Image (cartoon, rainbow, N blue to C red; front, top):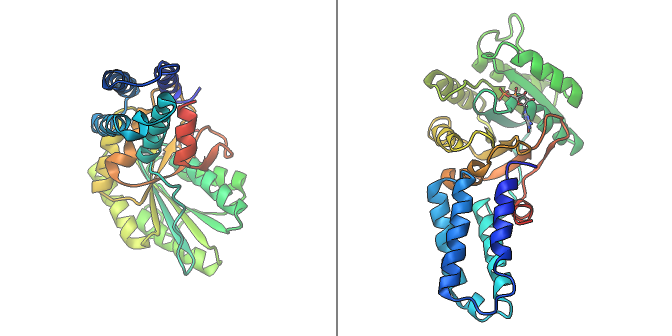
Length: 300
Ligand code: GDP
């Protein structure tokens, strides 16, 4: 199960095909690289990412580390694993928090990406780490978004600052600003600002996100992206990078059954690290993203 299952099966099969071979000729390596390339493209990994990945694997596999190895096949597996870790960002990137609380974390992304759900997950996780988060409902676009955040906040045991008459109703920038004031007044050490998305990239939505970012000066802007949306994820990520800008990525719906190669592309395409991953609808279906663990899982 999961968005990488087909890719995982394919890569495992390709690499198992090398087992039992002694020396690997350049032709063997080229053939393997071709099969890996097809597997990545079929999984929806973006073409430039595939190109870079294959070039590195080939270059390294044809070098001394494989030719002088006692077990060339294992050495190739190791190279593929290391290059996957690199594509996924290398080291685990921790959340960047402010020296002087409250830290402000802004969530951005398309409608349906899983932002509101993620807000609850992150709030619960932060609380478990000993923080005292406040959720701020600045998604005033989707009719149910405020109520939905209140529901997840309740489940997470984290208070929600929601607009009410005289408190920024109808104005997400004002709600965000007041949310930060509330956090300061009540000594919350982290503020999570849930913002509005649309079904597609939209100028008005992007401007709103830009205005909220300017108003709350966040320590992190997390771009939330649905791993199941395919190649479109790359276009959306690029639009958000060039629009509001972001400092980190959260992958959602990794438990889905679509091809998740786009999720493998987003770090390389945007240059920003993946911080968290969501893999289900429950608040517990959430974890810190570790590139090395994800690579190992993909390679079986
Ligand atoms: P938002 O519009 O970005 O705030 O998205 P929501 O948080 O409302 O999520 C949209 C839908 O995706 C909801 O039905 C969520 O239950 C679902 N969802 C969110 N995260 C995940 C996930 O990691 N896995 C699965 N399977 N569903 C998710």
